[in-house]
Length: 307
Length: 307
Image (cartoon, each protein chain N blue to C red):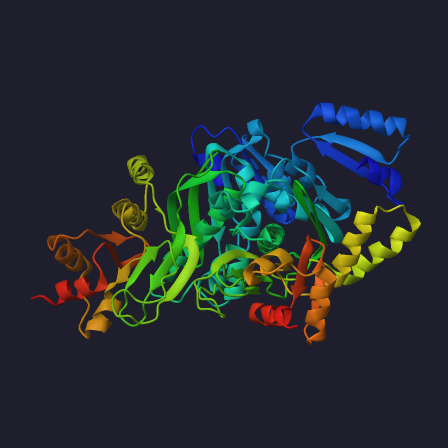
């Protein structure tokens, strides 16, 4: 919050709310040291604070929810406090729930359940956005994911809020076959593998729409020229732009190598092999050795096996 | 609200909130005429009004949501404004959505879809309570339905709110076979009829727990001695008490008669036939010619056919 008030141009006002008076004290001190005048603090229960900004002309252009654990219980109030066209950012740190250790809690918090896979972080992010979709639908609000981000201990999603009911159905399931490693998103719970007829594992209901808005990511890339940006961030932005229009779920090189009983390919080789066979393929910001493709598992193996 | 302030003993204060200033004006006038001093009006957006009463010691013992159409968008705020052990009452008048005319809207508002049946009103009520369960779970709140009520153009549910996470799983589906008329609630979507192997129709996810708390209904019956109660209300209370512990879904006499190609039985005869065969059976407040039973459809027909 302090950094936004200090570093982002054109910010009229930042209000930081917390129930912890000590944290607010520290924020106030820092604001003073930095001579910030566009900065306020508020000590209130989160939803009451957000509700005090739910009136049409008092809504925020950016609402950023960063709680201990799950943001799930704040979603309604956060949506109501975000203006039409504004951005809602949500951070989740309840990784055990989102990774499938406590499916009852996942269902209660996110209205869907994960499965344990190599691409669990994508499922986690899609569960969070799926929950937003359930809540927003009830409030006749729609949204578009702009960007998602993750690190060791958190997931973060950035959504553009629109005060119009949703026209599209972006809720569905991720179908995964642990036997043949096939994976894809679908609007129905398909319990038999389309490749090997094995029983599938199913995550969801969750968000199966896009995670990135290409135009937004490209604007982020443009701005980086004016800033000092870490190499790692540059790579994340490049990959996010590349994968923006690709299908849900990714594969990892290790997984496929182990399935093929061979050494993993280099990521760039894997992608060029797939694309030169006429399929789409891209890296993913969610995993350094992951790739997205519209090519299905049996075909991937055929392509990777070819000399 | 005015009647509660005027007629219910021990009511400290009633606050009526509306966005319509004219309606509030009329309420104020009526309060004056009735010399009510325990009565306030508030002109605010519903959720902001409710949020101003979400602090622990400012919550209400009864929150009554009576909007145009669906109460769905107010559920989170209404729960937060209800004290531990207090009662949340919700009225819904969006009958077309709840009866299966607009399933997309039903899913968006209530997180489940209805099916068109003879017992559509029960499905509607269970969809409303199911939605409350989804919202409450996310807020780590649980509840018990105390009573449900319906008339021509509305459904009303009365729930006891508890500030403890839910221990029980009361969300599931109603499975209905249009071919053999079998119906029951289940935690899974069972797509084949257990009786005739026909494809089933499935409503939900929705609330499959109890709709009535017997003790609460019995207390309502006790109070009626002090009041002038309409015959129709007396009958509703009697039937609600009777059906409180019975299974979800009811049958109607007409339905079974048409299936059997015979004239419908008298309700009392139908029930005594079933109970004297060793099954449970009761009337239902939801339908004058409906009955609940733990006896399944093939057995019901056998019993009704017996001379």
